[in-house]
Amino acid sequence: MKTRLLLIMFCLSVLLGGQAVYAQTVHRRTSKGHMLKAYRNVIPQGYNFWIYTPEGYDTISQPVPVVIFLHGASLCGRNLERVRKYGPLDAVAKGRSIPAIIIAPQNPGGAWSPRKIIDILDWTEENYLVDTARVYSIGMSLGGYGTLDLAGTYPDKIAAAIALCGGCTLKDQSRLGELPLWIMHGTADRAIPVRYSKVVVEGMIARKQSNRLRYDWLPGASHGALARIFYMPEAYDWLFEHTLEDEERSLNREIDITLQNMSRAYKGMSSQQIYRLTVVQ
Image (cartoon, rainbow, N blue to C red; front, side, top):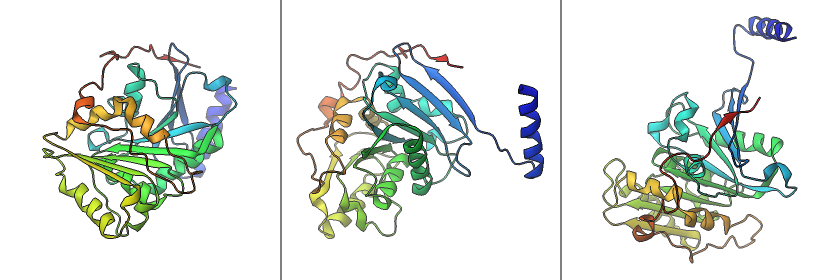
């Protein structure tokens, strides 16, 4: 059977001019029942991506929120393992509880494409039990740009977003005001100066769109310092406070992220991955 399948794949490849027509999936399960899956070549011309499902997902009947993580330029490429270097996937591996499906695509290079990200979301909604009213995005650096570009293009699909030390490449940014948005940037950021986030905020204020906007310029914080936010429960608590079913799409201003609580981002977590990942056939 395996030989026959390989022969069929080879014949299809020849018919399509040698173009790969298969999708590779790698399954990994943690020791506490969490599942991590790598998807490659499942969306034509799309990104490869990880999908994490939280503990108990296999036994629930209720739809689950989704967090889309967009990484920075340092993790670009075609090795999906790089995407686990920092961010939500690393956070859950080190013990942080994030009760959501996590989508973590890998950008091979260049700016993030909002359309390609939504293609992954659409695929996930077809294959997983997703709460479509509670889809969130969080990204840093290049991923901060990607988060704002995604939010400003598809505010009807993203319930709330957190953009860290980035900016926005959209020519028309008027739709950024349609969803709860939290922009954060360190004032000592030398990689992407804070002015790139300030331009976005100033534009929203000028358009009278600040009622769904939060922004914080963290004094003395460097570019890398904001990576700690991915490990903070406050970040996910804030995201989960919002839903597309809220007609007003009001902004939560009660949950705070400050330099002081950022210093406690790793409290109660392991410096090493505490979940032993094993391949599931």
